[in-house]
Length: 130
Image (cartoon, rainbow, N blue to C red):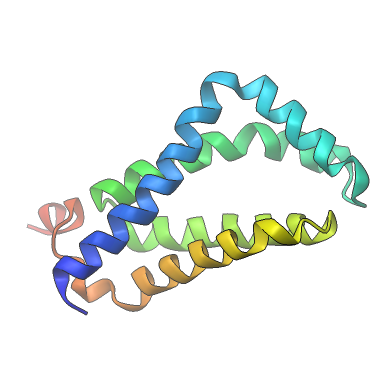
């Protein structure tokens, strides 16, 4: 993959993760309440949903920053993929089929970042290797 193309993909998915976290962290209790309300109709126990709803925006923000900087890119892309897979599972439990395409697109972007990691030249990772 061309290094500029890789940079565009990494910055795009990084900004999406960062933006999701950035807007949610300041209103964490409101976001948590919204998420736990959504999942009342699922079989997932509130004891799992509640802590996840508080952790998710922080994780999105941190992973987004890491992807934007290209810092520990492989770890960040794999971790973000795991988060997305968890979100996909949750989305299916509440039958929110309209959210799935966006989540699958995120996973596709993240998988490309892992697959073409050797094209990740515009990144902090390279500065750390010197």
